[in-house]
Image (cartoon, rainbow, N blue to C red; front, side):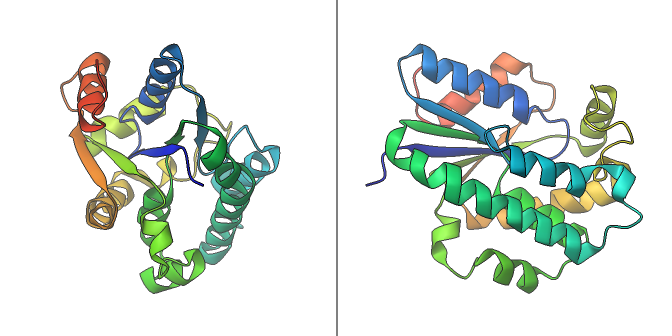
Length: 213
């Protein structure tokens, strides 16, 4: 029987998803809850998914990477993640807090050139289970240009750069439009992060989740 409350933080590059994921996890653990913190695509909880993440997102492979190949890797990561990590944790933890998920997969996947119906077939999105997988999606929204600058100025995961960030502002604006559209299909709370400090955004997250400050 499902026990965990499954919360996914979404948004474009540089809006603070990872920072807020860490804060929310710490907040809940300090209050005595059992919390699984994870992420997509690729989580340290599964070394295999991290290996696939590197192939998928390291810019050094971009010249060889095809649109469909990147999507197949993305779907393989999600399959391993959901089956090996998420499903068991739903029965053993109070909360699952995740940095990125299916919404990002759809938004980036279509911006990369995949047809939406192809992504739906690949993800079994015709199955309503996937739209209700998360109890809440916290969608952090912010200026795309500022977010990209923030992401590029932070410590880079890959020496050659991140393949998605390298596609530039026009691509990321398309991702944002896709995410705005697709977010309506999930149980989503929108939180604007522009001109707000970390604590203010976190306070708004707690309100959206109906958690005490």
